[in-house]
Length: 314
Image (tube, rainbow, N blue to C red; front, side, top):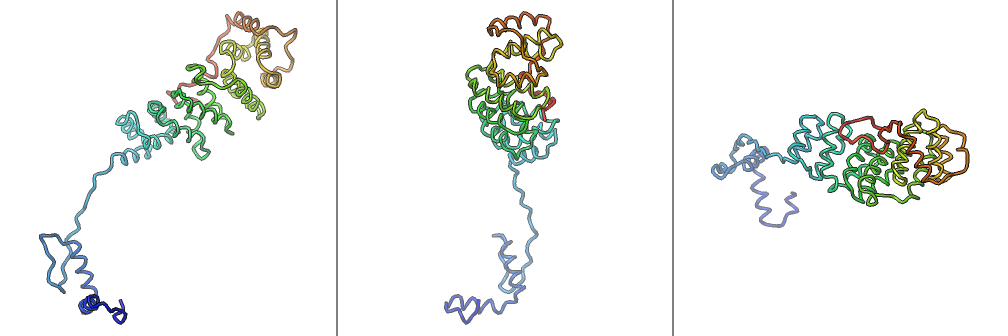
């Protein structure tokens, strides 16, 4: 302060007293007063009091912070400890678990943990699924968590992901949606026209080989009868030309022409089925009867259950 600018008597008196104290001694005295305890009053004015030795003050660490640090470390043992201590992780821990879906060494355990609370944190999972900034591996694996959540909110999130540019996210979301639809029926379903629009969009994209065909059949399972569709899928991958022809005939009867024609080409068939079009019930019955000796592999909409890393679609 500038003494000339001070008019208050108390401040003038303070300046007069402090002006005669050496600056270094004054600062030492202030530090000593800060560290003094009630049992140890400061020394006389002007004396230099040595500050007491610093006392380390340790605060107990917040268990939640420790758990988040353990998850962030990514170390399997530490992650397992957190999962064991939190069988139904709180939303704040879910935020730390979602990125770990990309880690193969902890992925199965993380999936099981997230499935237990999926219905409570559906919004968190869907947000990560639809966020293009999130690791693509994480986004491909989130649907395996959501398929344990039979709610309209989860289904809507998976449906939104079907418009995603990345094939892996679309395929995983379709498989999860089909699994929900198969288990819960009309409670988790899309309209037939909505499904066909999705198939049209997929057929309009560059060909991705058999994995894209699997994805298209997965989408069709949301609108068509599952059993004939499963037989048709197996027949189109088999060597029996007659059964393959019946499978194509079935698809021709249940799909509009603007979908069947490009799908037929994707299946490697240029020629259209010969003869008059038969009723769909008759074709489906022939398809079932002809498939007695056909090996029916697991259809594409019955994918990995998420208990192991498995091959993720890129």
